[in-house]
Length: 452
Image (cartoon, rainbow, N blue to C red; front, side):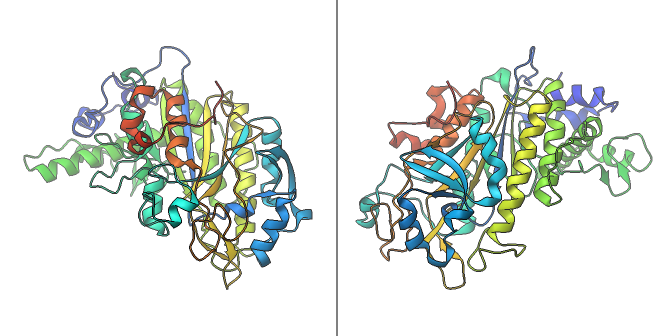
């Protein structure tokens, strides 16, 4: 009996065979991943839309600050405004003041920074890039393409992403039919080759028109559940019915989970990110208690395309958004620990690309390549900055821009980060290249981001 059916019956919903089976969509998921014990792991990927400026999130406070200040010009944060982080990767660092709530997590070794991360086809240096001596990912400065490439699109007809491929390659006993869950319209990261992606809104999408999906026997809901059982000889109509049925089942499941959840007491703030993370933190214990074993959640948020007005109190400034981010992330971690799941969830915060060191003409920055990310959770090897921190000089040894605008060439590949996370989830080491094909070009196929 699959996990969805167990969940719906536990919540008092009598599922319909055509709805919960979803055979055409779930054929890739054999044995539905119901845990015999307490083996639960979740990866939460928070994707910052627009290209967050990593140069103003993680800032050196030693002698390298002078290089930073000279290159950044009017974008440079005053050293006195930075929140002290400590020494790592050959530097002393400070954080953007909006991220101050993250400092205790770093000090508790629950949070780590990843320096100069980005998509790579093979290891590359700035000198090789400038000499056109190495293959680099296409469309490097395009928002839509880099969102997809960072999430695992291989620029082929196959639209799958690295987490979706990794989930399909997990041992059979770890799989389930709601392993890949998005909280927005983006799903590349989670898309598998043969499996489906579930959608969860922060309110559970309980009402479809007047129909309450948690009460399928009601007059308003019964027609929806009847439609989910319709059978068609026409291939397109049949696929529509299967997709409709899967979406209806997901809505019922997530709405019921949110009904059963205990509301968090931590202060997530009042913005959309806080609302999404609050809802997610509240339902994770329910998923664990239902016997699911592995799940990946995608949350996309923000407007970090800061070509202008990057600093200041404007609603879309980086300063304002990082303040919302720091508060929501700290509350998310606090809630997970309070519910006993602090060691079972890893959160990765990433973006499609970084920004130029050189400021733009409008008080902002332009699209670049390498960026600084962070990850948090009990399994994270925290309290440090992983990787090699770049030299912050225009035209310096890490600048791959012929115009010397400060577009750093990554020294950690996105795939290496994803590989470490998916292996923690249970991806066998001998199948890593199937999920991350570009890692065939790397001798080091992972990072030291996680403990053990």
